[in-house]
Length: 137
Image 1 (cartoon, rainbow, N blue to C red):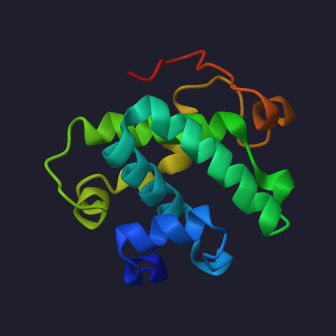
Image 2: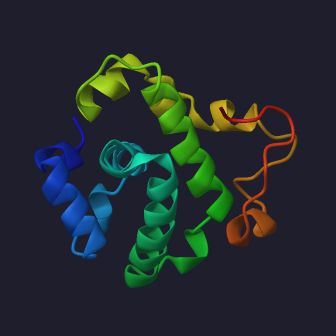
């Protein structure tokens, strides 16, 4: 089990927002959890905005500003929302067990929506690029 699970949703979100979360526990799964928390608490539209702002602050604080990818941040949030709409889970822990592909097959899942590599695109880092193969619902 990943270290971020040692924190409640509220503590995890607060530490992330205040840039006091240990960057070592902010894994891919922790990114997904943050999206799940924000969507649960604020809905998809506000979640997309909050995650972008907070993630930009966090990566700047930890000295990893060059790793921020606007397109990836938005589509990851949309992907979590898509699966949340199909989910029967009441917690992120149950949600990620219900939809493990978000964790184990994420690049392929996101890649199926684009004909180009958004993970390494300089343009995708600074602006949102709409999917050109398969839209997110």
